[in-house]
Image (tube, rainbow, N blue to C red; front, side, top):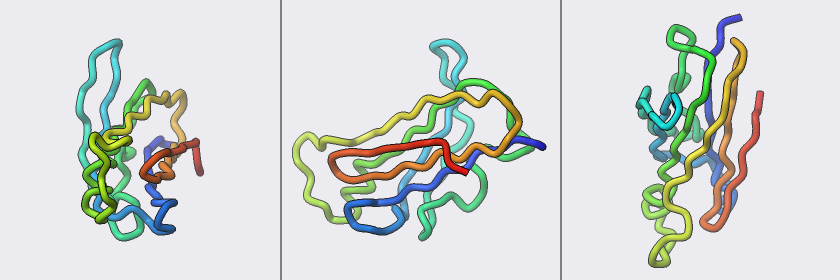
Amino acid sequence: MTGYLTTHVLDTARGCPAAGLRIELFRMEGDTRSLLATRVTNDDGRTDTPILPQDTFATGSYELVFHVGAYLDATGIPPEMPRFLDIVPLRFGMSEAAHYHVPLLLSPFGYSTYRGS
């Protein structure tokens, strides 16, 4: 099996997918971050294609960066100054060639994640 990475963002405060949220994917090598991809979530809160497709998959350490502050601004949620959540970085490792799914459950004052399927 060849590996790949997908993500999904759900707005738990509004009870819907988080459409229009910008996500960046970085490969981590020590303290060095290399940008691999930038995507925006669709109406289902997913990216249209895997954020790390099979043809570029490699095991190692990665970081997904979710730009939640801009998303919350766009939804009309009144911002506190400064906004409690603005940019949410998630660092994780992929140790084998498999499907990795890293969802983000989001509200203005909290988030959670897990390795999905």
